Length: 211
Image 1 (tube, rainbow, N blue to C red):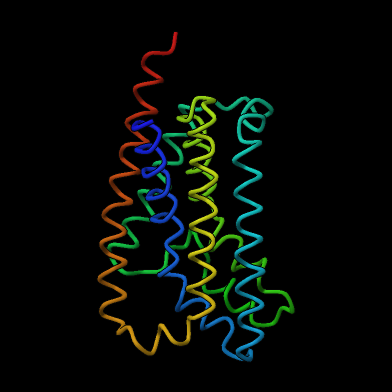
Image 2 (cartoon, rainbow, N blue to C red):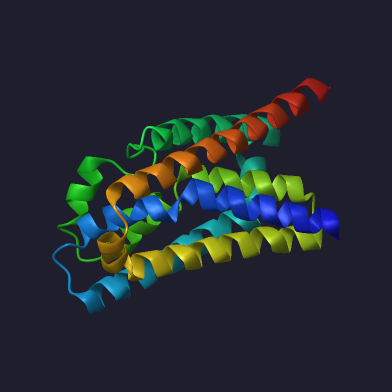
């Protein structure tokens, strides 16, 4: 039981750091600038639900996808870890990571009717890094029901936090100075880098043990 709880905490911290709901607040405010408060709340809810569905699908079907494309989990761990490492470096420099969303995508989104799916849900929340993270976590769950449940709980809680932060984004921006937001993002980047190194090391160990 203690091991399952520790795994759940690791899963929650990994999902929270890679999705980084706090860093999404200023992007959300920029994209939804022309919208009313009620429209912002609706967009925030739709984006969080779409992100949760996307990550849940990859949580369930990640193994099948690997089989179809002939990808080993060790290779995916290394690739996912490298992607998380790149994201963490951008976070430590307090810069928007192009693996989440580019300036061109944000500009395009302003002209779209439904921005909750793109780019808010994908790729801002359920981006490549988040998808890689849930896939790796499921491989480490090793089919144990409690650990699988822990991954689902981590995804659900992180998406719920993202929804709450986006819903109250305008208020949060007024009370939190930019310097504090950047300091928090740098700390999250450092922690995410540690998670990324662990993923890469785990993948390398598995590759070396493979026949």
